[in-house]
Length: 139
Image (cartoon, rainbow, N blue to C red; front, side):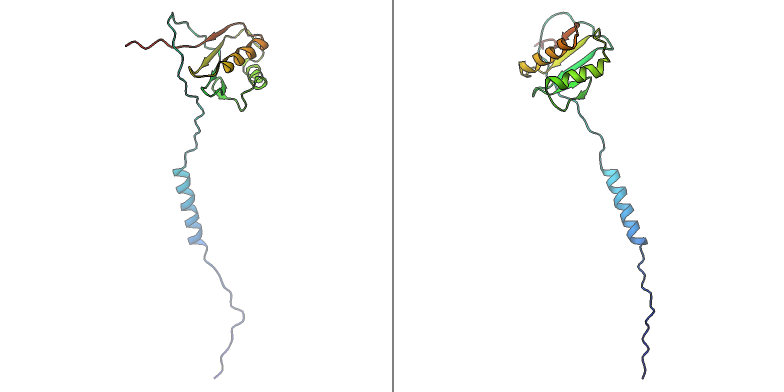
């Protein structure tokens, strides 16, 4: 009895099921992943009684969170120092210091953070500066 040995046998792997599984996983992760990143600061404004004033549409708004983080026109700054705040104010204003500047600070914001924002505005030459408050709650 002679057995012949086949030496030229070609081995193939069918990749179609593997590719199907990879595409199904890709679709699953694309559908289940949320790509939006919320960067809004949560603020609890201090209360004050008085008349409401109208804010100009093209005003620059500096928002300060309770932890002292700054955001200029909704864009959060990476570092909360005077130089970064001045640079952001220059970029947003485009050199126009006649724009009104509104500082919106949380009620629990450290006083130093508000003074730093006012100092940055003063060093840039902004003269129309206002602070945001809310009406006291009536009970």
